[in-house]
Length: 298
Image (tube, rainbow, N blue to C red; front, side, top):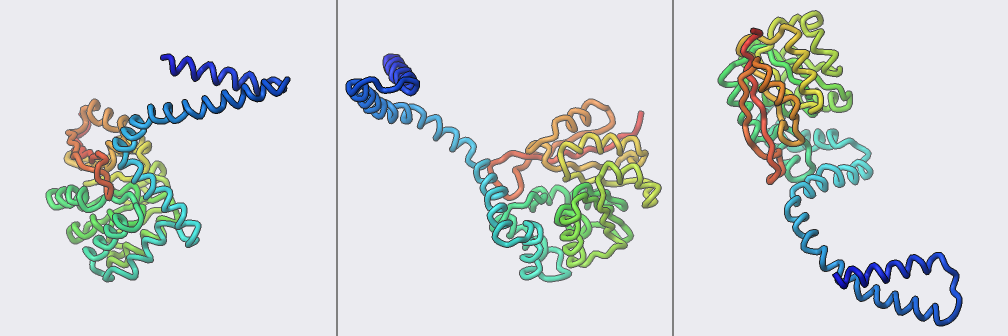
């Protein structure tokens, strides 16, 4: 307490001295004495906050790693290469993966995202949840919201039965160009994967009229989290969800989609299950995928 009062007295004198012109040599000597006292107190204040700073760094260390890998490294390499992160990923896959070998492309993608630069794909661990659902339900018509680089598109396409079709929606034209190259490199043509470069809220109401879709067996959401709930409500109103249709939404815990989960649980339209996991390519950050089974309109 005495240290705080002493510090406040020193600071008040320093502040007041800024607004006064020096009157004498003795005043200057007094200010020097005050500054010397202030220098003695400052290390004590810094040491008092050191445990708090260390606690924050340790507690949120994985978030600092994410900031470094997802933002700082990306910014530096964008400036140095003149290429987007997604284009750099494609160049790496093109030179390190085997064309037509889906597993080779996915493994190369995973290596690049975990060791080189961070991209928020579904990743190998949560990808196994998606693989299991595809094997259990064998969907014929799949809607993917958020193609990004095409990682999940390729992962879905390899597990689909003959005659199945994916409608993959991506609003960013640059990402869509990269995704199409990766999808074709994996060996999937336009008959199996149709890439739609438009916002999801424009595509969903037009799926029946523009693409002849009558029912969606599986919807995979991995686009903007704020769009999860509006797009789910558009799907409910479209009449394209049938009893047993599956909606799988990634990253519902981090960054999170609380309104989406609240609606799914309270609407009475779904059986809801949340698969706990960690954020792709970053251990220590809790995340999860929501699996919604449509029960039908009551």
